[in-house]
Image (cartoon, rainbow, N blue to C red; front, side, top):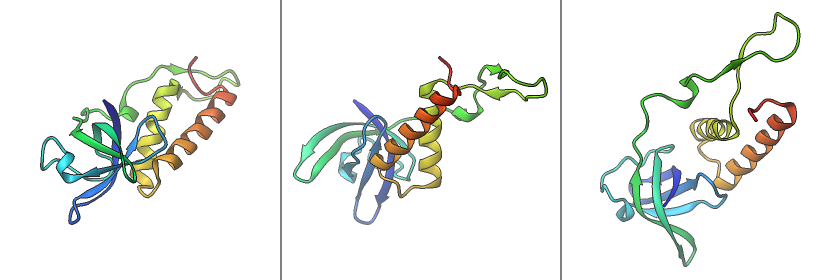
Length: 139
């Protein structure tokens, strides 16, 4: 079972695309492939699904909308640490690699819904590499 988020969905035509959480290739999805029938198809909706290779690329089936937690990840408490430096430095959140990846993905899906899965993956990789080089991530 794979996971991802709806990138876009045309309710009139009955199809759309899913951005996979751990892959660059977007996945085609048809309305009939949703288990719940009239599930939410809005961009950013988290889903779990199976994948098959179709004539034109990857195709999702057995698509199920994932219940979202009531608390957004950015509102979850993280360990507060002080960076080395002057005493007037303020506290900041320190995230794990997975937490940062999740935050970046959520932000990109919410603010730039036209990005493809490959573009999202490229941006995430670049930002995580930079964060690691600057020591901004938990070990």
